[in-house]
Image 1 (cartoon, one colour):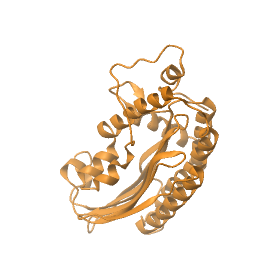
Image 2 (tube, rainbow, N blue to C red):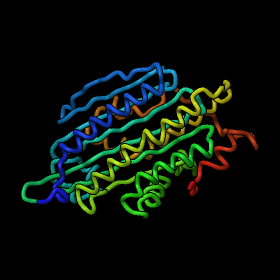
Image 3 (tube, rainbow, N blue to C red):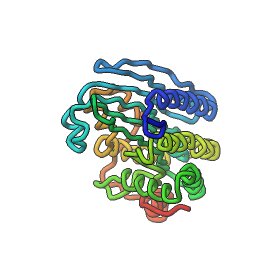
Image 4 (tube, one colour):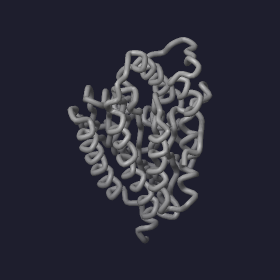
Length: 305
């Protein structure tokens, strides 16, 4: 078989370990104070990972950058119900996932992940795919930041076809949508799943391009906004909006559900939660306020470019 059709999980794993290192080192430099603490862990059912968490930095209140490689025998029925072709197969899943919750309300929260999944059975072709993306959740948004974010996202996608960015952007808008609130989680970015065409080599290149673009998209926004003065009012609004992040991850996120269903490490799966959040009954932003600007102009799908 050619490299285009033979999935190679060791190549993916090597890239992801290096990506985790690069993201952590760059975010430490951007923060200027905090350092990621590493926690290596093993999964009883097979595999393990290294979780890295930074808390109480200059910029990052809490952030985590996870690498995991988990494997095992048959997937549970809850995981194969939607994908009957996976029944009776052993599986491996490898990925890097991160969530950054900054201290300053003017610096957006962000999430990114890139992953590879393969399920195998003797005598049959493997079932495999790549997935991932990155998205941005501002509290006090600036249109120029959102345009920059999407410009970098489009540039990462363009070598793979002119339809890739529009498709992955729409997928992101649709996926990170809180149906019970009728609003997007933030201003979107990229989301893709089930990527296995036109073969392993090109699919892997696509995943790497998106993984590598994350820092180019996010770090300039940190640098621009990290010293913006803020008051207790803005901090309270940030904590209120963080509650939406919790709601999405616990109600709608497929990755959280898959991790918990397959016996993943709970501490690492729930690393995405903010260190502080608040809820308020029937909150309504004051008309014409900066808070209303978020609701009126940003929490709905838009063409930013």
